[in-house]
Image 1 (cartoon, rainbow, N blue to C red):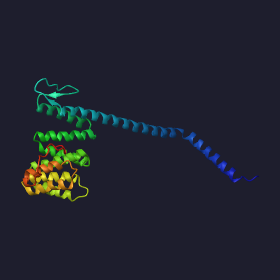
Image 2 (image 1 turned 90 degrees about the vertical axis):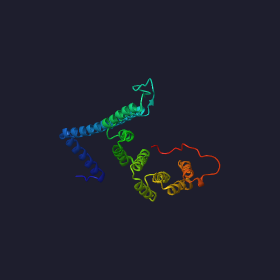
Image 3 (image 1 turned 45 degrees about the vertical axis):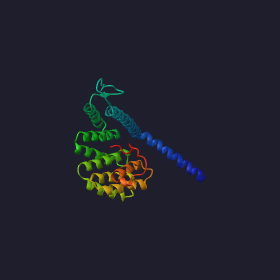
Image 4 (image 1 turned 60 degrees about the vertical axis):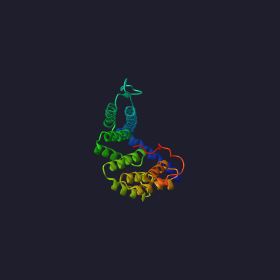
Length: 258
């Protein structure tokens, strides 16, 4: 009997392996079909979930856009059109706020766990604050900060919470918190924003010189800050001796909205 070469042995092994695979497939065809069907089913489910999530996000964004049209709608004394789909208007601020609240709550109820629902909560917090429901406003702003603290809207929510603390007589604690932020390299707010809030809080507490010092740091250390001219204005008001010679300072400096 002739000896097989290594190449022939490998070829026979390959042929035997293929044969065994075919035999296994023939005897287990149902199992294989179930397995393949399961993979296909999982892929179909994953695709459906993806498409549903995308559709849901789009629906949430559209619902939020409609709510925001109402939130920012015009107030007109006569001829109000609250149901106008493009440019709604309302006869009173109270009527606009009530309708905006209704639509924003629908976004949260219908599209929970979406970014649009979270943003709706941010505006519901402002409505609650406007209506004097400060504890509710605090809870909604705090929830947003917990979820989106690193975003621009998260920064706005932080500033709203700081302002709320000032209004509720917690100014001294606000000072401590802001001074602690200034010492952190990873503070949740830019330093010029922190200094501006610190100056406002010192003013609220009638600690005039410390307010001037906070504003002066903005002027000296942050020449490109959008708060710089406002800080110069406040310095001039609080300490006229430091007012710049000649001319008046412009007003209406942009900053984070309240």
